[in-house]
Image 1: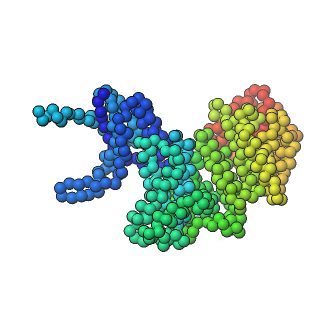
Image 2: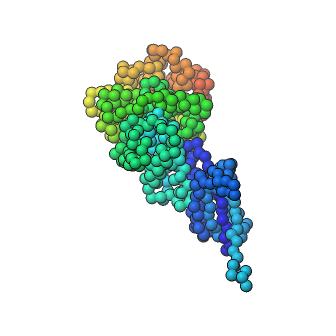
Length: 116
Length: 425
């Protein structure tokens, strides 16, 4: 098994509490299923949209100008390979709202071995 | 833990009502923003961590925090509700006053206060209902437009205007002021009655939405019944009427989506628990000597509910109830329903006579069940060509697919032999 992060990009907007509830229920069900199949290494956390972007010259409100690029949270997944991780990500409800999941393999290197 | 159905919608109403009281009704927009923010924050956590054991309490706690954040963010001094204003402006007292005002006792009357505020006389009945659905039931503009088969733009306009009127009122309605409460109560009952009717008879074709409107009307009427001043015979009668009618909701439409006449409904599908509740409420409504149209409509619904089969229906009693209704709230539609009951009781000739005698019959011109009633009576007399013509006229007036399917079947029936009862669902 290898580890992957799911980065959830895109902010949601709901016209009504009912729609939000339905969407929230989908997320809960999705995570539950991933967990039941043993794919969740760490549920991760949602990230607050308000934050700062810091560079050499300035500190400004961020993280991104475009709502669709904002990372709303992350989760650590265990999957056989990148293909399986991608398949797992396809059930993410964020896709219904025009958001996306960035699937990134977590690098595992033996630091000690570099020293020898 | 799973979220109960429509929890977000209902909590939205409670939170908005509470925040509008604390911030002042003129800051309704701010209250709505804070509620959005609270939902957003809570739902983000729940997505990852699952639904907590007490989601309502979690939402309320989040709303409190969001309210404090919003107050802190306000750079320019805003005028809040006068009784809380100076506490909200100071960093020292803000948290305590929000905590206190979100307490169970303070929040108890918020829904009712907002309901009465929405029913103010400067707003049309249509606007009152839209506002109640939007603020107290958490329906979006799109959802209301869907339920009322109206354009989104029209509903948007109606709600924006109504909110402006509401925001202009100095403060929310005071539900502790007995005289004002009693004076406003009939308007509130009327709005809830119309909301229920929209669900029951309205133009929306989707059964789920119709049932939702009925349920919301019943939920808000139940709120009236827990308030000592709201617990009047008329309120009980209104609640009884809703329960007894709602008991038949599921049986009103057949598997093709067509309306079913009362006599054709599968009575085993009627919700006996709701009927029981309705009959109990009807009994409670009999206290005092007040007789309202709600009492009579509930009694008519009870007469149908008690009949185990269509043949057992006590039409004599129903005709006399319609007589009483004509005496206190006459209208061509009531008179038409009375005529249909007369036909069931005494035969189609007397039914037709009763129809001919309806005052203001011309006002039924767009009502499909007027020609439909003529059709049923013609059919009962064996005049199929006349009956078919009446049903075709009714079909042209059908307001939704359920009525259309029902009337198409009636046109077809004019070719067959089957005897059909006259009363529509």
